[in-house]
Each structure stands twice: as structure tokens, then as C-alpha cells.
Length: 459
Image 1 (cartoon, rainbow, N blue to C red):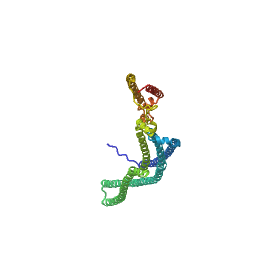
Image 2: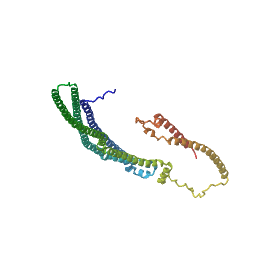
Image 3: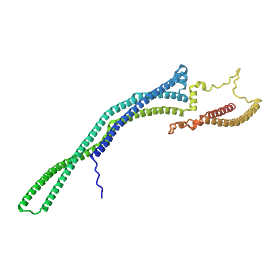
């Protein structure tokens, strides 16, 4: 046999309901605390961003001033009276062009970093201030809305509690009325059964006395049955009334229960999410996005401006040409480098002969002199060819030394996950002191050999 269902008592149901409501109330309190904390974190983050960009603006301005001083120091030198002629004569030479572009690039970077500092102070920081003010104001309003939503939810829970208590009360009255009705029905059945037994047990007597007794007993039984029937009718009416009230109360409770669950679901799934999205977060991420994109735009334009200046310098570096500079220099100082006038034969005392004379006995001497010169020239030609090859090889060695591509330092700007700069192979080898000393010694030795050979060369 199945065990009878165990029904919870009113106190147990109320206790469970109170526990559940207390948990919800505690959750609601923690939600507000969590939102408060989130707002404080946002305000602190925005304050940190303001402090960061304010300090960065100071650094950028200091850097700009230092660059300006550096550029002006050397530009003032080129503007001096002493160097005006030098600048006028040398501005077309490719090394001087590189130097001027380098100074212009420093001034350009100085202006760009001043602009960057101004953008930080007068554009980006005010954006963060505005976002912070908006966040605080919106959170205050959101908190009021959230508190109202929580109050409405607690009101619904309290109404459910009241409806549930009413349902319990009417249901208890209905059960009590049903119990009393059943008791009356049992009494009625018992009274009817008792009357039947008494009639069956009665013994015959004289007709008159028997008739009187029967009439009296019937009257008594009828009176008792009527009382029981009347009591039963009252209890039936009471039960019907209480049963109807209980049904209505249960219906109200079920409807309130459905409405309460719907309200709880709406608050947790929709209202709470909307409160965070449309109130607390209203415009925060979008405004922060715009502020940081302003920073990115400034930095990228700074980089682009720097690249434009570096491209101009790179173009000038590519155009470094010793041959063209030599030609320009000789053209600018044509009176210095142009060949002098030929030496003319100056006749002495009216001697007008200006050509070689091969008359005897001078002819044989000239022929012998010519042969000696031709022999000497052949020997010198062979020697000079050998020397020329040696000079060309030595010059190529020097050029290889001075044109080695040791300028790539990209490895120095490769960063690991720990953000520590990785040392480049160039830095470890070429720029090391032993390597520099060795290269310098080789270069100077080769140069010395080259000029020694050149001094001994005769063309």
C-alpha cells in the first residue's frame, strides 16, 4: 500500500516562503551594492585615464621644447653671418641637404608633439571628464529606477503572501466545515440506525398501552432526527459557503502566483538587464570608444607626419652622390678649379723658332732620347697597370667597409610577451667595443695602404 501523502502545515509553508523572500531581498541588496561598486570602478578608471593623459601631455610638451631647443641651437648657427656664405654655397650639396632636412624634421616633430600635448589636454581629457560626469548622473538616476523596480517586486511578493494567507484561511475553514458536515452525517446515520433497532426489539403489549408508547417514541425519534437534519443542513450550507470561498481564494492565489513568477522573471531577465544596458551603461562604452579613438587618431597622424619627414630624409640619403657633389663644387668654384692657361713659348732675344729642330748633329741625339723615353714609358705603363689594379682592389675594400649595411636596428624594437626589448644581433656584434675597434683598425690600415700606393703611383 502507498503511504498517504504528507501535507505541509501552514507554519512550514509560511517559513519556506519567508526564507525564499529573504533570499530575494538579500539578492536585491547585493545587486545595488554591485552596481555601486561598478560605478566607483568606472569613475576611478576615468580618473586614472585623465591623470595618465595629463602626465603624458606634460611629457610631450617637455619633449617638444627640448626638440625645439635642439633645432634652434644648430639653426641659429647656420643663420649666423659667419656661415651665411657657407650656407649659400653649400645648400645644393647632398650632405648639407640631409643636414637641413634633419633639422627641419626635428622642428616638425617639435610642432607635432606640441599639437599632441594640446589634443591630450583640450580634447581627450575633457572627453573623459564628460564621460565621468555622465556616468555619475546616469547611475544616480538608474539607481532610483532600480530601487523603484525592487520596491514594486517586493510589493508583488507581499501581495502574494497576503493572498496565500487568505487562501490558507479559507481552505482551513472549508476543511473544518467539511469535517463538521461529515460528523453530522454520521450522527444522522447513527440516529436512524438506532431507531430501526428499537422498533425491531419492541415486544407486543396491550393495544392501548402499546399504541401510546409507540406514538411517544416515534415523536421523540422524529424530534431527534429533525434536529440532526437541521444541524446537517446548516453545516451543509456552511460547508458550501466555505468551499466556494476556498475555491475563489485558491484561484486568486494561483493567479497571484503566476503574476508573481512573471514579475520575478521580468525583473531578473529583462528589467535588470535593461537597467544595466540602458541606464548604467548608457553611452559609456560609446563615449569611451570615441575618446580612445581620438587618441589613436592623434598618435597615428603623428606617426604619419613623422613618416613623411623621414621619407624626405630617406630620399635625400638615397641621393647622396659624391660624383654629383664634386661636379657641383667645381661648378660653384669654377675660378678655383678650372685649368690654368697653357704656358706659351717665350722667345728670347728675337729667337722665333718654336718647334723641335732635328738638324745634324742634334738629330741623332733626339732619336736616342726618343727611344729612351719610349722604353721608359712602356716600363712605367706596366708598373702603373699593376699599381692601378692594387689601388682599385684596395679602394673596393675601403668601400666595402664604409658601405656595410649595419644600419638595420629593427630587432631592437621586437618585444616579447613580457614587453622586454630583445637585443639585436647588430647591437651585440657590430656595436660592441671590440668589434668597433677591430673595424676601425682594419679601415685605417687599408686607407694608409691606399694613400701610400697612390702617392707612389705615377701616371
